[in-house]
Length: 429
View 1: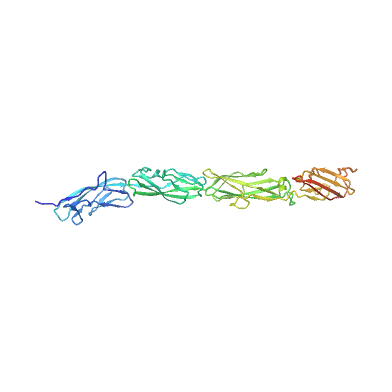
View 2: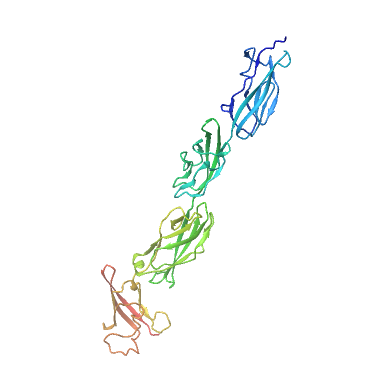
């Protein structure tokens, strides 16, 4: 009679409660020792008194020492492997078999790309990062995984762990940002995976510089009503996205702007499309300067309209453009040669157009009034050497060559009276 030592290879786990729950990895993973609960003669087996027949079943394998390993990239699921444990140096055939049960968990957090967001207003870039994440081959949800933010490259771009959304705070600077997050199996909290969300934050921005030039149409260095100022504009796209429908406005009454809307690429400037012309008014000449400001507009790819007030020299500031003009200063040209040659044909008083409440009187050397006119304007109401006083001289003959005396009276914009007088020379040659 052959008496065999009692050998007992016990099952490792059950289908309901497996020997090991393990996370699938890209490399082979050691699950554990299947012989740790096996006995020989009622005591735990050792490598000296038993050995295991190496076996492989599916993704599971057991070596001669009883070490159970899982193959790389094993899909999630429940797996079993049967093995045989035999006594060493004893009667052949003193063996027993058992089954090891293993559950494989596969958790996969996939990278995401959020929708572009305008940083000026902010908003939601992605509704739920879990949309393309899986747990054991099925979509992960907040009921099955724990969600946390690991890091972000901008504090204005964050993950909301309550609903999985990625949000951009208002005022976030334009740029490309990453949010790193982690999902963990709620049933096995140490089983986790990480992924990133790429977010492009649109930072549209525009700048305008406006310069002014006085057009001295009379080429005399003085400004008069109706002479013009020309404005030039340089518009620059200072943001990180192209701008369309770029245009300008200017609220200065009477200004005429030319130029159709344009498109500006990132960093692009335009200084030729838009120009403007403005005719000087009496108020401008009385003030001695013209001050105004233009506004540039541009539309981003996400239909956000940006704007900027003009500056006279810098894209970084918004100071009004101020152009000084010299006008409304009374200057009497006291020589007249009414011969219709286009030069000095009338008694010209520069700046008088600013003071329409005026009178001009002209006397000959004997103190006789030869000309008087209210509302003198250097054009249709002007002295051309023709007597309009009470002297007996035919108008067709005109006044003779000689020295005359003028008196100019006028009131300013505050109704304050002023008077200027002097000699006037009339030359018929």
